[in-house]
Each structure stands twice: as C-alpha cells, then as structure tokens.
Amino acid sequence: MRCFHVLVHGRLSWVPGASALDEVGTIRPSGFYAHRYVLAGDEAGAAEVAVRRVRTNLDSQLGWVSKGFVTVQFSAEEVTDAPMHKLLKPDNRGHTFYSEE
Image (cartoon, rainbow, N blue to C red; front, side, top):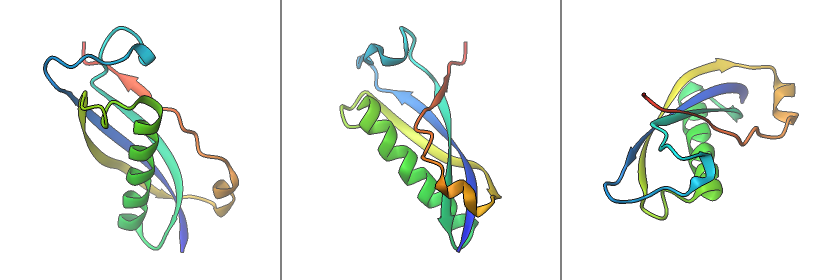
C-alpha cells in the first residue's frame, strides 16, 4: 500500500427548475476541485477511494445530489505519490467552486 495525493474534479449539471441553497453564494457553480490523501495499492484504486470520499463529503455538506438539484460527473485529474506522513493530516473537506462566466 502506498500514499497518494488525488486532485478530484467535479462537473456540476443543474437540474432545470431546481434551485440550489445559498451555501456557496447566489450563483450556481459549474464545478469544483477537491483533494484527498489516500492509502491504496495503485493509482486506479487511489482515484476510486478519493472520488468516493469527495462524493460523500459533498453531499453531506450541501445535500444537492440527494435533494435532486444537481448531478455530478467526477474525475481524478491528478494522482501522484505522496509521503506517508500526509495520511496523518485530517481531510481538507472544502471544495473550490468555480463558475464558467
């Protein structure tokens, strides 16, 4: 098992007529980035673990997916080896949202 740093990209597709709650402001974001340090056997496994953790955290914080406001397409943009001591840090559970305007 190795430690990996994974940069996860989430592309948001808003359901027509659904309105987002104002947790991130008045505009609907087009997507976001988040990162995770994960323990996995290979890069593919690291990407899978990181995406699953980001998906769970996103919905627990905002509820957009479970409430049917948005669908999300996830991808692991970067997967790199990281030092094992990075696993001792608590997860950064934030998301960096962006709009395409």
